[in-house]
Structure formats: structure tokens, C-alpha cells
Amino acid sequence: MMIALKAATPQLPRTTAVADHVVAVDETDSTNALAVQMIGDGSLTLPDHQDGELAVAVVAADRQTAGRGRNGHKWVSQPGRCSTMSYAVRIPRAIATDESVNGWLQMIAGLVTLDALNGMIEEYGAAPNQPDCSLELKWPNDVFCHGLKLGGLLSELVIPPSSGAGTDADADDDVVIVFGVGLNLALGACRLPTPQSTSLQLHVSGLPSFGEMRDAVAERQVEGFRERLVKFIADPKGQAESLREEVKAVCWARGRQVEAHFTDGTTLTGEAIGLNEDASLILRTQDGTDHTVRTADVGVL
Image (cartoon, rainbow, N blue to C red):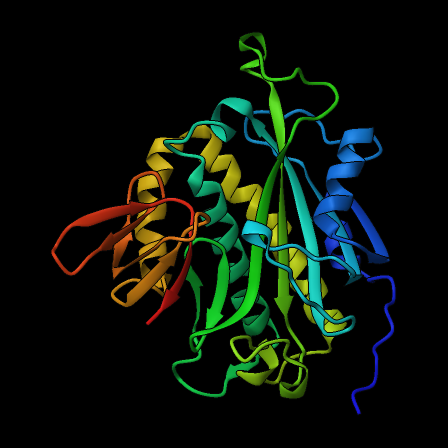
């Protein structure tokens, strides 16, 4: 019989030291939903973006009762085993709504997450169980290890109360992007929610306690979002090109035969070639035609 785990308010001393604001609760329906609500009612505020500076707020919970994934999917997590965090940042509306570059915001969240996980592993002297236990990104929003899902990301745009409703006069305003990050850090094999999921502790030995892992990863994510987004805001087009090369090295789907499932029920099968300049996926079908995939669930064949 599986024993139910009790939720407890996350203790995040390292994260609190680097973040501009931290909200930690034992349980909520969704950390993204809580962050969006608090931004909307003014109880969670972030200073305007300034050149070279970026505020980052964190909303954390030990248990989510209605965790959300991309395209309406559910994110199942367990207290004391899975990290469920949302990171809120203010960025210029012009960048957040520019379809030629805003796809890279999700990719940045993925790279920040990989950096944070790998940095935590290195800090504690932990080591992969096998040489090929590297962490990768499955376009557009999953963290993968050995072809299994270790984590998921969900980004949402929020108009803060101080901004307008999207008129031309408000084009220079900041908006808030909330990045939700769910990570299976300390789940045993018997607690995995699906056969397609996995947990960090199943692939890496010598890890610290779950609480230490969660805090160390979140601290690095705050710093990573701040550093990477400041650079991106300063030069979106230039950063897009360097990000494209960086993602290429950790793109799990690249070079594989995959099937893209679209929200209208249609599918497209082919080889994932790489990413376009706007962060969309290039999928080459058997007839040699390259297709652009912007919104889909992508699975390997």
C-alpha cells in the first residue's frame, strides 16, 4: 500500500536570499494560478524592468491539487518529492508579444532549468549512474532523461494592474511572464505517475535531501532567469541566434523520427531537424518537405 505524503510549507533560505519576493505555501491548486492571481490583485508586485536589472519573484508549494501543463494537460506531483515552483518576471511588452522572438522565452526557461539541475548536481558532488544520463529538453517544454519526462514547464503572460489592456499607447509597458516549473526530484520508481515519467534520483547518486535539492535548484533558477533574460531583453535577435545553437546541443528530439500532435486532432510525422529563428520546430517529412511546428505535443516514434 502506498502511504500518502503530507504537504509542508517549503523552506527556501537560499532562494529567499536571491529572489526579490518569495511566496511559499504548503498546498495550492497551481503555483502558476496563485502567481497570476496575486499579480492580478496587486498582492505580488515587481518593480518595472530597468536596463541591466530584472526582478524575479517565486511562488512555491509542496503540493499542487490541480497542477497544469501545456495544452490543458495535468501535472501530477507529490509533496516532499516533486518541486513545484513558479517564477514571475517583468519584461517589455514589445518582446513578450513579438512572435518573431517570444518563442525563445520558453526555451530560455528550459535552459535555465537544465543549468540549475546540473549546477546543483555538481555542487553536491553527485554523479550520474550511467555516462549517458544527461539532461535534455524535449521541445517545447519538457525536461527529459533517457527519453523519459523528468520535468515540465508552463509559461503564461499576465498584464499587471498598472499596465493598460494592450493599446498602442501601452506598447512600451512591461508585462509579467510566469514560468511554472515542475520537477520530479526524489520520486521512487513505484511513485512515478506514468510509465513515460522519471525522477532525478533514479539517474543520479549522491544527491542531498529533497529540501536541499529544491532550494538549491530554485536559487539557481532565480539567478539564471535574471541573467539570461537581461541579455535577451537587451538584444533579442542576437540572443535568439546564440540560443538556437545552445538548444541544438540539448534538444532531445533533434535527429529523431517524431510525431507532432496538434490541438485540432491532426498529426504530422517526420524527422526533427532543428529550430527556426523564432524557436519553432522544423519537422522534415518523408518526401523531403520541411514543415514548421509552432504548437504541438511531440513524441518520438
